[in-house]
Length: 84
Image (cartoon, rainbow, N blue to C red; front, side, top):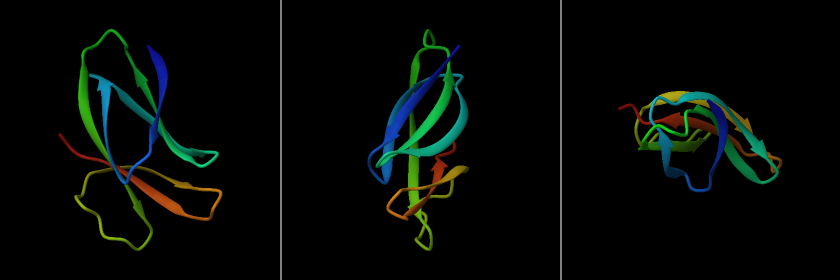
């Protein structure tokens, strides 16, 4: 098992993540919104969709809440993962 970091560069981000992953945390690094996921890199990958939604904005689709991060610019993002 390894901890991998993924950058969320768009409000809706499709990521290829090894199956059987376990979500760990969301945060900000510099000007980047990132998530950390526990993975087995030997597992086949699957596409997962994440949404970054600003406070007060409509959700494009309700998914599993993964966390909130505040960027250095003062923006606050709430991360959701589309349910499978």
